[in-house]
Image 1 (tube, one colour):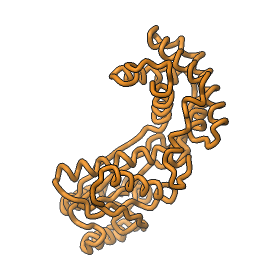
Image 2: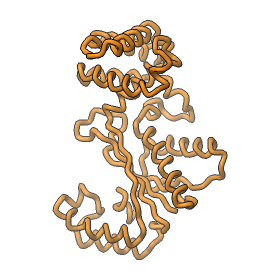
Image 3: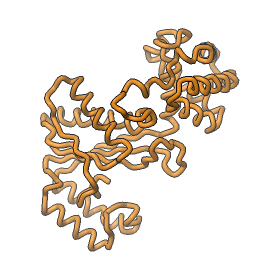
Length: 288
């Protein structure tokens, strides 16, 4: 099986781009090596000429031409046994979930009862945290993101204290007394013990000379889902991966390779594929 990975809505570590609130990843896969199929490559080149564009990309083609070409592309998908799998992250939601997972982990926050983190109650608590953030504005989310990606521990901890204080002032608005109690005590403990929370430590565990901001990025989180998705596809089809091709993304390619190595190491399996970073090619339209 051959896999081709690309993304849309990538704004790097600027998670507050109003025009790109969602990050998408897509995996296109086929039993055919599409990069070496001359017939397909020529068909794509012919489409470029017919539609007078350098690339068959939505932003280059426009909505009118895109509607005309969609049927042709659908036929190509069928002809070359091409399938697609999609993943996405809502960037603002990602920040809140990261905050929850750092602050309300009972392994680091002594005020969080075990059963509120290790059972289904954690989902209820997370929804309450979403409610809590709804009483604030984007400034508090930006502070959370700054604290998560801050390299300096002292600066990160200082921002975290401010965040906890701001949220504590809003807890009474949550219409659930027990949730108020749990959240208040947890936030107070985090505020009084910011160094124990290790709020920005998720970025330090990776090493490999990858910058802290990149490791905290939703791009790296969602790429793990992409790898797991490929594993599921291979299991379902009882196949091996011949090649996994990731589109050039200078900021994240190094980290993606590190993740690939980790997954292979953890599985203790033979290297099932080659993670190849390539420039855009004649068929990138199909997964771009």
